[in-house]
Image (cartoon, helix red, strand yellow):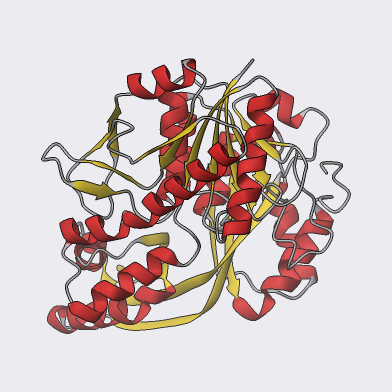
Amino acid sequence: MALVVLKFGGTSVGSIDRIKNVALRVKKFFCEGHQVLVVVSAMSGETNRLLGLIDELSNNRHGREQDAVVSTGEQVTIGLLAIALNNIGCRAKSFTGWQAGILTDEVHSKARIEQINAESLKSEVEAGVIPIIAGFQGLTEANAISTLGRGGSDTTAVAVAAALKADECQIFTDVDGVYTTDPRVVKSAQRMEKITFEEMLEMASLGSKVLQIRAVEFAGKYKVPLRIRSTFDEGEGTLITLDEEEVHLEKPIISGIAFNRDEAKLIVRGVPDVPGAAYSILGPISEANIEVDMIVQNVADDNSTDFTFTVHRNDYVKAKEILAERLCKLEQGSLSGTDDICKISLVGVGMRSHAGIAAKMFSVLAEEKINIQMISTSEIKISVVINEKYLELAVRALHTAFELDDKGAA
């Protein structure tokens, strides 16, 4: 008998019929002899609807009160699923985040879990009850309702699994696992049976939308085995594990290809190459809460330096305005930029023990006459920035070149 935490996202519980389907999935686990806890999101579209109501009242969402409003979405779902389970012969009880003992910091709408007092959940499970827990929410030390930000229900599930030392945390969604790349771009993309936490963390940070990055970080830190499965289809999904050797025995060096269209590039030229130059350019960007991704610095023969860096496309205009104002004050340097770029990344722990991956990547892109604008590397990742119009061509070519089309993962 295993202790498992099952998490169902908004699409999975998006209607009464789907909630009934989830209840049947949960009952199957329970009837197989497992101890089961369930974490759910709000029904699909509900959180946006609630935020829309707030926006009709005020331009300021009022963090504490916003959390009080949007947390009700998950409370509806836990009650409905508990009712559905009781109707088919399972003892189930609904728990809000605070009833489940989830305590967070005081940062409303982006709170982080600090502690879970899981004794009440443990007692219910041992008594044969299935706790249905509201994801995405908790309680601050000041007894205020808090929410964890978008995708926070994944983090809730992993945190509950860690607190109860569950054998596995299964995330049910509308896809049947983690693929070598987006199947909408490469039809021959393969579902992976297993992937390491490091690889999943890189893919999540690089644009893969399968799993929330904070949930992956939490699972890796507390060694919680994660499995991504489909709510609507049978299948074992993809297991995210710490065992690198088990994952990559006789597997290709590259596990997957991630990409992100939401990129923009800014170039600052002709800044004096002196101590503090980087901060004088990037400091105001950071102070505006704009996240910088890739950075390249080039020093010219005339002791000037150029900075090229990327930001999220939504921040492009604001970042450009900040830099223009900064260069005006400095009375030196020039500014240019573009928002028609994308980032493509090869990910795989096999890179640690294999040379020539970057050269092969560059060769494949050169054969397709695709120009590389920026390059970034780490132990298990190589990222390049290219013109967005070549994204699909580049991903398909790389997927084939690194033998991911034939990967026997499904």
